[in-house]
Structures are given as C-alpha cells and as structure tokens.
Length: 467
Image (cartoon, rainbow, N blue to C red; front, top):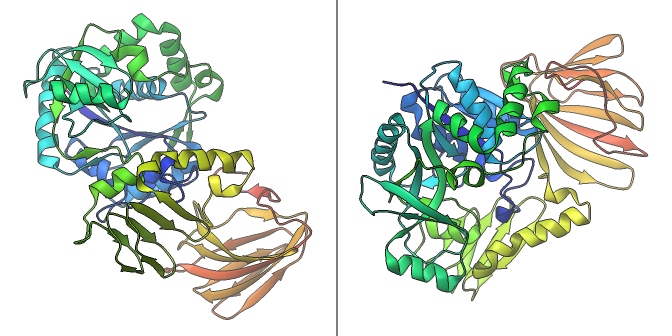
C-alpha cells in the first residue's frame, strides 16, 4: 500500500473572525471548540498516517511547530512559504517533498481551519478517497449541503452515490436563488477545499496546465535552506509561482476529477455566524464564552476573554470582546467583518494584524499600559529560552522579575535575578534575557524613551535566526 501523507495548509488569516483571528495569530492557531486548536484538530484527524507536512508562512512557524509538538505525534515537516501564492503552488511543493519519502505517496490535503464533527464519517470517506486516488483519480470531498449557502463554491457530480462519482463541473459562489436551486436539485455539493490524490498524479496534471508553476516549485524546493527544524523555500523561485488555487489550476481542467460525498458536520468556520451555528447553545440559543451575564437574549453569541460582558434584550447579535478590541455585529452581517479589517489596514492600525499579547519563539509579551514616552509590558520567557542579544537606539528598559529566575547579560556583565529583583538597561546598551529555570520566567518591563516601536531592535545574535 502507498504511503498516505497528510498535507496541512496553514496559511490563511481568517479575517472574518476578527478580532479573535488576526494575521499574526489566525483562527487555525486558536482553540475555537473542544480542547485543541483547529490546527491540532486537523492533525489529530489524520494522525494514524503519521506526521504531516505543513505549509505555513514564516511569521507563524514557531507557533505551528509548538502546537504540533504538543500532540506528540511524530516530527512534522514544516515548509515555509516566503510569500502567499495560493493553494496550487503550496500543494505542489508539498507533493515534491512527499515524493522524497515515497514515489507513490498519496496526499490527503487538508486546510488547517476546518471543523469536522463526525470523525468516523470523515475516516470512512477518506478511505474511499484513498482507494480512488490509488487508481489515478484526483478526489475532492463534496459536502452534503443543509442549506442554500452563498459563501461556498459547489460541485456537480455525475451521481450522489456514497461511493463517489465523476465530477461534471465546479461552479462559483452563487446568489441565494441559484444556491437554493442547487440544494433543491440534490445534485450539488459544497466544495470543501479538501483533496486526496497521488503526489505524482497531481504534479503530472499540474504540469499539463501550468508547467511554469511546477518548474518554479521544483526550483523553490531545490533551493530551499534548512532553518532549525524548518524548510525555508527559495524566495526568488517561489515568488515566480503563479498565484492560483488548485481549483483553477487543476481540478476544473483535469479529466481525472472525482468527488466523494461527505456528511460529517463540516464547516470552514468562515465567520462568526458559522461558528455560532457549529457550537453548543443554551436554552435560548446563545453561545457563551467567558464571564457573561445575560437577560432576555436569544440566538446570539457572547465571547469575553478578560472582563465581564452583559447583555439585555438582544437577538441575533454577536459580541466579541478581546483585550484590545470590541466587535458588535448583527449575526446575519458577520461576513462583513472583513470590511472592518480592511479599514483598519487602510488606517495603518496594528489591530488588523496583532493582538495585544504577541507570541514569540521564546514566549510572549503583553502590552498592559502606555503613555507618550513610556510603555509597560508583561513578558513571559519559556524555560531554557533566550531573547536575542540586542540593543535599542531610542529607549531604555527597566526589568522587574515577578516569578522565576532570570540571567541578564548587560554589556560585559552578567546578572542573576530572582523574584522582586530588578535591573536597568540604559539606552544603547547591548543586553540579553535568558530563563535558566524549569518554570516560566515572568517579568514586568518598563520602557521609556522618544520612540517605543518594535522595529527599534538591533539584533546581534539570535538562536531563532532573526539576527
């Protein structure tokens, strides 16, 4: 039997789930249901096939690696895209990588941010898809629709048999009347964006329609560099890849397209309304997360992360309160949240990209207060981790240890600090912070100076390759 290799695509930004999901910390890295993140749920779904190949962007690489390591399901292969080029190139480099392990490798291509409630039904459909892939088919999963959805593309197959059928055509996202007609006909399925095929077949078909894309993908992988545990694709080659989806590049043009129907409680969680539909509700139809008190509210969602949120007399409303942003939206308009994100980007506001708490490979920092010439952060450093050896041109820093132990390199000196001890880092002084202990190091950093931006960092040494 051929090697089945899970391919997880983790490059999306999930802007319609703002302010929970943001570019630097997108929805697939969040726990939106159950006890695991969406990325972890996806990896667990196919864990019987071994460690996956994950394609992600550079900014999220350490969070992706850490979350997969927590599963203890083997060492994943993490391929870094220097720039987003849509799904066809991402799958091409993953296919080329899989062929290094097995020339007959079968790929199970899964976006990292999908919900599948019935994992047994998914596994049964996956087995059917694998069998078809071994016979040379490129298999798409068609979701049995339960409503006229205008946010998905549709697949029209030659048969609705549970065994699957040849794909007759793909259709774009329809208007509501057309979608209702598709659902009434019983002949159309939602296009899930999940696929199964042999690596060799995919590349052969891709070469027929987009030969330059295959050529640039091969060059990008051939010129890749190992960076810690990551495969960093050649930026010069990968940037030349055409920005195109697998649907447009291959699936809509090949004669080998096949569909396996899937009825397993699937959702791509593309917005707050779809998340509300997917989660458990109270007797009034409300989804509640965090410290929330309601009076006479119905069919709504209230998500609070840090403080008390109350509601009175609300219906079909979504309220999402994070540490730095508050979203209030009519449930039926939740797809329009993307327009708010676009406005934030146009205004150059950091809330479109970052949360107040920012994750780094060594831990995280939370900006808990600021003024005209000062900023206060709570910094957490993982056991054994170090920040880069660095200096700042425009700010001085004062560190106070709250818990744990710190080794501070300041110029040529080295200081060991424990709880309630502090140290001052003058402007322009080289310094490094290390946690030598077995528990997290937590400290308060007080910055003062004329400019406090994160780009005022000059790195001299960095174990994470950021120097």
